[in-house]
Image (cartoon, rainbow, N blue to C red; front, side):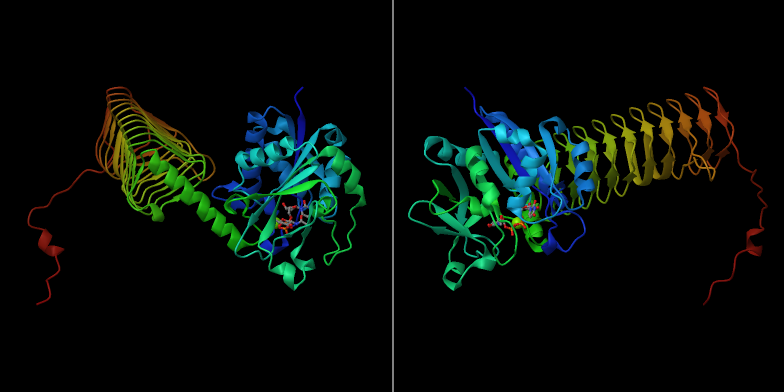
Length: 468
Ligand code: UD1
Ligand code: MG
């Protein structure tokens, strides 16, 4: 018979020590919220164990923000929310879970995790669970670790049978020196939780109901000491957040290097934890690559590029100082230096977008080129068309945005404007310096500029004498 487990993630706390307004569980670390990491570890543990599992998240402070997070979560169906009305401590938070989700009493085991520990993985859950399963007499296990600086953590005080956890505020001078601390990850038999949770009081220096009181000297409980503190690093301050953020990013870069991604200066690159990069790709110093970005194999990204939520296909070259957001760049295309791709840009295969070109919500078909100093907005440009230097789509009339459509194999000379809405056909030719206000049919030639007047010998009337 397979066993069942309720995974309760405590996320109702204010995060007072963070001194920011958002709930701590939603603080962003390497591109994702602290809660995202703990939920992901829980989901992986549930998926790979033989246990029937469900996740319950206890929300409280600014719960509407956590509800919004939950609404947009792809695994929402596996997650339930419970509400802790007042943040009276971690034991009170667990009570709130059982109050709102009474079917959690039916699970054989209860795993408790804190939302402020983003380096946790399914491995720690597995290790902890193994100990509980192997020792039939045990009613609960807590993950602990040794640290050179135990400040802020609950200290582990071993008894003759079980052990106790003394919170920092309640320690005496000797207990303060204890280096083995509580990670706040526990797995318990739900029957034990049922027997003890209601009896926990708040007679301590904080006046809070401490979940750590589920562990006592005379209980069949075990502190399972893990060899490394890293997976359990808890975040209570912005300094701790920055530290863990750095650890996640460094781990990411290291893994990508093992997978064959070349970073010319790995320490200078800022990567979110879920960015994907293919092998053979070379990344120059100073790049920021964040969000839901996927970069394929053999891409070149020169210095100081910013890439967010974008898809970059094989053999693309992105030259120095380019800025890409919600854009797609297809195989063998090149971008920059100093180009800007705004949301909704789709550059086809072998396209070229050169320096000082801004593109917004536009599609360039295969082989199209916009090489210098242009603004392309709300436009479609057909295959192999060439847009000369300084072209502008006049897409905005002050109220609405309008579309520009340019066919394939068309040539637009330098310094032209197309006043949208407008269509320029296939195989058309627009003479340099034209302001195009009327559509041009396939094969059409258009010129829209004033005629030149040349007067022989008259330049001297305009040239100023040079200073000696
Ligand atoms: C907690 C442990 C401490 C451990 C440390 C590890 C307790 C009493 N102490 O302390 O032994 O060493 O974690 O990081 O559990 N929360 C609620 N409702 C509340 C209070 C807190 O949901 O009323 C949530 C918080 O959002 C957070 C988690 O519980 O995710 C832990 O709370 P926090 O205030 O960070 O506890 P620590 O002081 O870190
Ligand atoms: Mg904490």
